[in-house]
Length: 132
Length: 125
Image 1 (cartoon, one colour):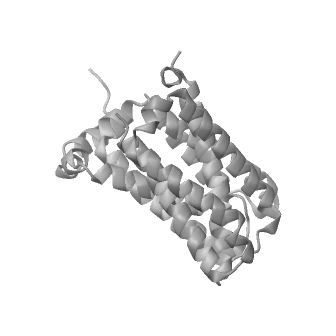
Image 2 (cartoon, each protein chain N blue to C red):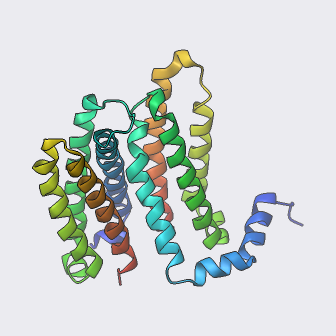
């Protein structure tokens, strides 16, 4: 008797939605969404290097595009990604980025270095997902 | 040993994507500022721009030569290289003028390079 696993159940439910079928069977959906995902890294990646209030809005736009396209990419193959070790690592790293954003202002320098290291690790984990 | 079958290829790809974020990421910020958007001056990030470009060119070359025949016949790869040459020439000549036209051209060309680069994966057989 296995325990109820809400994350696995969510992935299973997503796997059986019409959206998953549409995404995974379409010739263009995943290439186009993937292209927007990479383009967002290119356009908004620079904001990780600068901590300036004028960039705040720009950074949030980039983050929103990444999250939206990332969610759709996940929806195209939820079960495979659920079982991917690199995907789990990536989600953990993203969680850490979210937590490190909550550091008080006097740790601004530490937060900056931390986010650089974490985002670089996210990139490594992301490339790993493509292979296993 | 083909590079694809080891952990090396994803590792090199990762550095390529980091270079992308650093290089295009800083170029886009500078271009948008040249176009009149209220963004901070990022002159002090020049070393990131150049390090990012160097990392991309180096890792790109390594990946290409790991299986040159495979990429040579990939239509997306050919388009990407053509666009890359244009973008690089514009970057080191026209863009020095810091005009709005040069900034718009730079944004357009690098965006097309990234899109073509992603398509290399889709046309890979």
